Length: 380
Ligand code: NAD
Image 1 (spheres, rainbow, N blue to C red):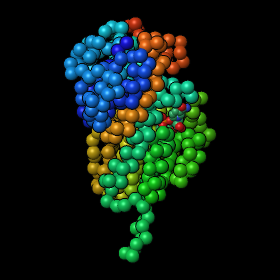
Image 2: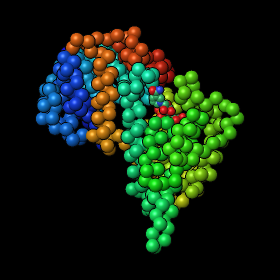
Image 3: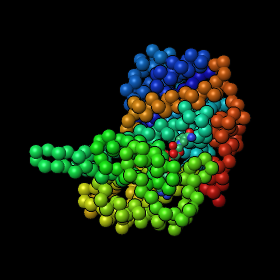
């Protein structure tokens, strides 16, 4: 059974789906691994590193695709690449099934079996496969560095002979995986950090990292589902949050927004007046750009400036930390591949409580009900 790895072609993408240490593990499982020449260079891994790990390096992308039993990617392949695969082939990667279901129609039409890392259920057994958490960790860390690099001041409190330099003030909106990593990073750099989230459970985690948790009275509203994830809030509850945020935004030097609701558009947490009331020289980094953004004026992958306030909407910060982002992703996908390989052969057990729910298309059908519903909404 042949596992193939492509060189990623999206602009700004330097990650690779499998790193050499994962190749070694897969070869030990009696699988063969082929990789497109140059695929690891962005993540500082050469063709020789892959050869030494037991992979075959191939120049011809089309030949590589045609020989793949499992294609492992970071980003969704193009329709042309889907069509070059064998009909029995399996594709595994970030396929954006809920945000862009129609883009997977070519894979469906070609009869491919596709698994989306975004759909891996967040149950204890699947923790080692949680690529969303891995990438959110990297994004939260890098967002703070981006902010620190951009603002015209320093982060830590300094007491010098020339006087005292006050610490930077950082406000984090959404204290999930990315937000908590951003808090920890900003605290290590010496900033004073405040954070807001609708989930009460986030408060304890925020405080344990040395930040202040901003609380708002949402009138006893249910803010979490059974799995502990945030639900979409009513307009009234959102407004209460926005008012609190606007008040604290006035004194912030850096705001990092990470709020998302699985399968829905990201909540708008800052509108124009809140942005316009910020200090000159401050910055907002909106990490929810891929799902519509938390800031009404942010634009995905663009830098907007309003009266001295910079608003960035980077959608692929993990791609700017390619070595560690690839290392984490590679281990996540390798853990998933472990479920698909038995005695060196492809073995699809759709009754498995990770494999089944992560499957998007199989045998020409939409398998995941949420994706099927998202597709029906698009076709309507
Ligand atoms: P996410 O990326 O979907 O959302 C980020 C944060 O935004 C969440 O904390 C959410 O509560 C918050 N949010 C949503 N709407 C908001 C609003 N209107 N205002 C303010 N904040 C809002 O979430 P995530 O980072 O992937 O994970 C969320 C939680 O799940 C975390 O507590 C994390 O520790 C937990 N988690 C559990 C597992 C597991 O294996 N059980 C795995 C990963 C994450």
